[in-house]
Length: 357
Ligand code: NAD
Ligand code: TYD
Image (tube, rainbow, N blue to C red):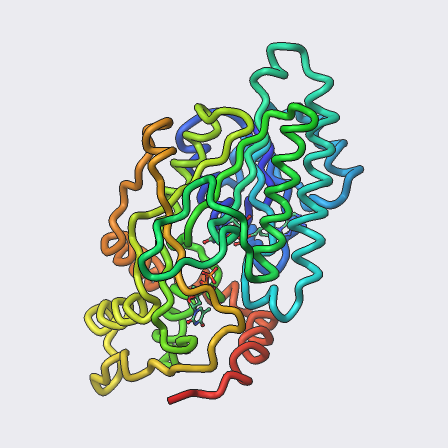
């Protein structure tokens, strides 16, 4: 049995769906069902007896302790987080609460649980903390990519909260010997990503003929990884990673934001032309830049490739085509997640960002 947190979100749900396809080991999923958590992401598991869902907060120490005592998991895979940079700028407290305090509560409960295990179970136990490359800060155009020993230099309240959680994970290994693993991954894309993030937001707006809001000049660079490749890396780290170590995970696909948006537009011109034949690129609108916007992220994945034999398998162009096709085929999912609270967010975030030249 493994305990997953945040399994109703974008990456957690992909992880759970693949996990139960590949193994018979049961899972318990602890998720608070915030705006970003959608039980419908796991509809395929509704009648699967290996799947247990618990609605609750990772920051609830009593609940987490009870779950660990009841299910006695051999591993915890920790996805639960507030994950959107723009929301961390307008509302940082939830990020401190879930990402920092919530992770600490989980670590403390994991430590108490781990100490009850017999020597064999204790040696096999793992706490896998799913983190981000954003903790390393921003790179210049020709800087070498982030290695695991790159200094921490978080620039947004989101990345600061994830950096703090990484430090607590490190400290629990160093101080108490808890067998932790940390992964720092680049930007994910794929099915079921909430349309507040760049790629699904652009697809969603383009399908409705709405403006495509590119922050600043759109020359910021991200490294993109398909979510299923990320999940494969997490399985490799869980199985073969060394306790106390961290592993960088990336897609070997650095792209400027504007190039990503252009690619989406070109695909949609072919797959779902706008009425009147207008090109989707005509919807691109440059808006006010994000405050403190990180210029470039890039991952050096040589450690995980060398030590665990993992490398990305899905090329960016193929993965994007599949992702766009998924959104076209799953409009009901998009409609179900873009209800009232989503519209409030879009109104609050974008109405103040006047179009720039
Ligand atoms: P997401 O926002 O799609 O999902 C987060 C999930 O956590 C939701 O199901 C939500 O309901 C749940 N959650 C939030 N607060 C909770 C709480 N207090 N208790 C229990 N559950 C709670 O996030 P995601 O994109 O799937 O990211 C998952 C993890 O991966 C995060 O830790 C994130 O920092 C990390 N990560 C994400 C990316 C990316 O590109 N999305 C890249 C690298 C790392
Ligand atoms: P995002 O998906 O929010 O991920 P992150 O900020 O964690 O990298 O954004 C990816 C990039 O796209 C980032 O440089 C900000 C930019 N962006 C836009 O230009 N417009 C948008 O509406 C959004 C949401 C993001």
